[in-house]
Every structure is written in structure tokens, then in C-alpha cells.
Image (cartoon, rainbow, N blue to C red; front, side, top):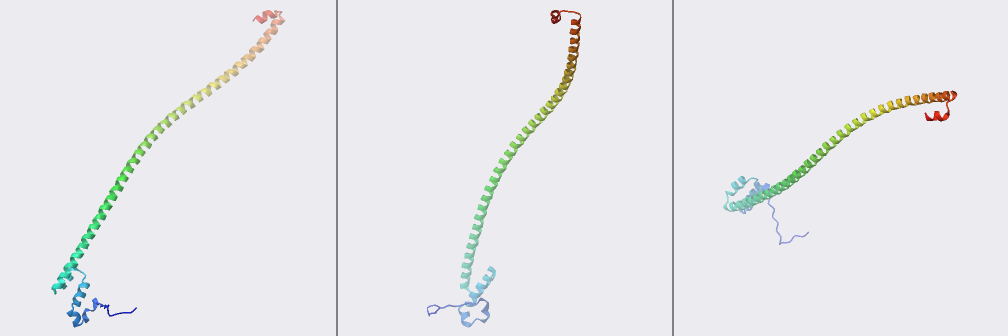
Length: 181
């Protein structure tokens, strides 16, 4: 890299104002260093009270910073409003979703009540059918016993009938007469 006479670079050491030369002081470089080192508006105002030229510099810096602060405040407000609208929209969506879920819950609760009632009805029907089945089983047992008893009586009657027929034949009753009975 080469340097030419067309470019002059001056460096201002902000923390070295105590070793400033008379030329640095005459050119107000010490004031500039103090201005750049200031960390509060109060420090800046105190420094600028010493020199009218620097009062104007301080006012320009203050106005520039205030505008920057106002811009920052406006941007923060815009972000706040955008965030607020987003949250309100999300809240509205959540309310709508909650309402849908409440409707769905109500429908499912109603369906559950209907199914519970149907289940109770079917349980009662099952109990009735079980009772009827027990009754029919008992009747079947009774009828089976009666049938068995009747079968025994029929067998006994058939034996008695066969004996009677044999007796009638022995006593000489003609078969045409026996067939009529």
C-alpha cells in the first residue's frame, strides 16, 4: 500500500487530552475529544457552556438523538400494535376453537346420554329375556317330566290294552267287535 500527499489522516486520542499540544488546544481538538467522551447529556451541556460553537454542535446532536429516540419509540409502538393485533387475532381464533370444542363436547355428551339410555334399555331387555328363558326352561322341564309320565302311562295303557285284547280273544269276542272299541 502506498501513501500520497492527497490524503491526510489525523487521529484524535480521546483518552490522551492531558498531553495535548498548544496547537491541539487552539484547534479545539481537546473540546472535540471531551464531547466524544461525554456519556450523558449533562456532561455534554457542561462542556458546551465553555464555547458557543460547541453549543450548536450539542444542540444538533441532541436533536438528532431525540429524533432517533422518537423513531425508536414509534417503531416500538408499531411493533406493540402489530403484536397486539396478532395476539387479538390468535385470541379470537382460540375463542372460536374453544366454542367449536364446547359444541362438540355437548354433542358427544348428548350422544353418550343416548347410548347410556339405550344400554340401560338393552340391559333391562336382557334381564327380561333371561327371566323368560328361565321360565321357559322350567316349563320345558315340567313338560318333559309330564311327557315322560305320559309315555309311561301310554306304555302301561298299551300293555293293559294288549292284555285286554288277549282276554277278549280268550273269551271268544269276535275281532270285528273288538276293532269297534
